[in-house]
Image (tube, rainbow, N blue to C red; front, side, top):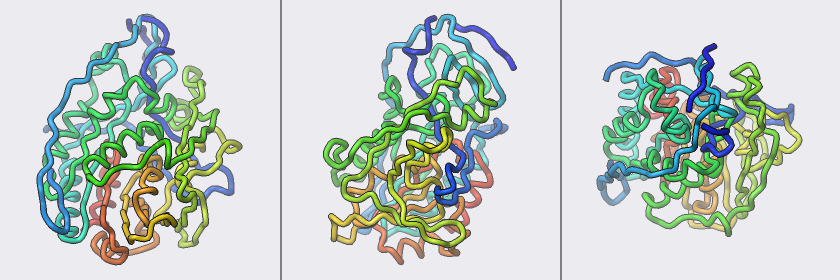
Amino acid sequence: MNSKKITAAMLASMMLLTSCSTTPAESSVPSTEITTESSAILTSETSETETTSESTTEETTEPTTVETTEPDMSDVPVEQLGALLIVGDTAYEYYNFVRSTADQYITTINRAGSVCSGKANVFAMIIPTSMDITLPDSVRSTITNVSNQQDAINYMLGSMNGVNKVYLYDTMREHRSEYIYYRNDHHWTALGAWYAYQQFASIRGRGSASLTNDFTEVSFDNFRGSFYNDSNKNPNLNNPDTVVAYRPNATNRIDITQSDGSHLDWSVVTDVSTWRSDSKYNTFIGGDNPWSVITNPNKNDGSACLIIKDSFGNAFTPFLVPDYQYVYVLDFRYYKKISSNKLSQVVSQYNIRDVIFCNNISSTRNQGLIDALSEFVQ
């Protein structure tokens, strides 16, 4: 444990951070097998296009510089604890680029674009984690044993072909002073996911839902997530987050297929006010399950999307509900427990219009996760 001081005031004015619960809640929670992406630091190695049924065009996004006012970090305690950096009352996860898995991820997404060509649009988004978004630059510049997430994301998306590339790094940086990541959990908040949805909708080009008209805001206090647990309940992180969720007005029903094949009639956004403190991120789509279906009764046009996600996709999924008659949710980490179908079969069976890969950057360095994704896309 290495504790030291860095430069200015209290972290109260500091940009807010990443987080989410990785532990199933009460016995009433759908069965989940949540893999915490905030694992030990991995050893790094050296180191745009749109597919539609009509045509293929290439999308490019130039990096932009976002100017923000940096908080005064004098006298804010900074502690390195395993795979975590704790700054005041906020924790951050280290990220190290792994070339071999990044290249495999690129190959997998390119393969998805190929197998879906002429059938569905494929969208790829790689979600940055809080260290390179909300950690004040004066502190981030002192952390030298981590990789630059912007460079890693640009490398991966820039190497993809036949898919729509949704660049989120600049989007998140533009909103870095807002509550877009939790302080004591590794996930983004629903607000962070909303900004990502807006960027996705702009690339998709068919308009977007309205946060005011299409959703009802609910909130749940007293959330202590994965960072709090992984730090052995570090007292500096004992400052609970608030989980804010946006319940779709069209429907709040979701049909979940659990890992044992059983079905559960659940809620897109569940009331978790009485659940355990570390389980409240599971308000979103019942946590991590192999397969789920949301049917919007207000649409009858047959429109359907497939979101292929890790746990960051849970907070993103509700925003898709107003846009489609059917939202199919597939967690690539567990899908093979209930089905041997591959991507091409799922797209054909459910008449999928849009395939959305919604993965956080830590997943792209995890060999086991990328193997599972590759197996499904093959």
